[in-house]
Image 1: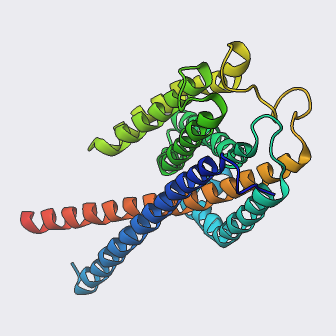
Image 2: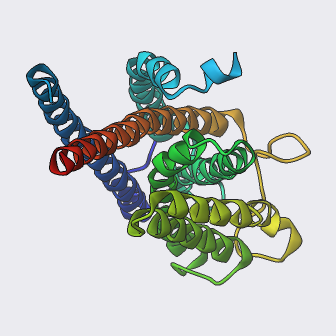
Length: 56
Length: 247
């Protein structure tokens, strides 16, 4: 079990927080980009359907 | 058969079917790994408690090297078959490699301070790992900044292929040169030099990193395919408008 009184505890804390921040940032960016692109694609596809129905 | 297996739609369908499982695996292995790392693994007899940084530093480093190796294989495949899918996957997974390399370098520096007394040393392992980050960033800059994507992806593939030379250098640097960084203790010709109480959390965290990387890769590949679909719509609209103007 981890010894919370150890002088190294602050380094362990820094390392885990640093890794968590990078993983959260990558997850957020990935999810955000995916959502943005899917909304754009839906708009394009619905436009294409409208044009197709009008015979353009 | 191979053509069906490598079709973007087929790959994406299979990947998306596995996505909930890989996300669940990330959570499960991550929680088990963290529990084992903090409550069941012992401190090191020399490094003390700071050895627990290993449970994120080492899996991130393995991930960084593996992602780059995948990128090199996919780039080679793309060059040989002249298919666009391998280049698309290479571009999709590059940010995962960048994130893993940053974690490896950052946590390594944080681990270095209590162990070596310094955040950074220009030794072979650390310098070759920094070079890997520059290779990743060089690839990413090349494929995102140029307008002509096909040319950019081909140029990026050259970086991925040539840069792969750095991977065995990173792996064997601790054997070839006298480095501050410790030699390999898990993947080596003799049996692992660390006890199972440390190996268990290490492998659990490695599985969590692998499952996380897979999940992000599937979402990023879907995004890249959707970007191409939008471009083809734009192209079609442009052609339609030109036809109208000509008429």
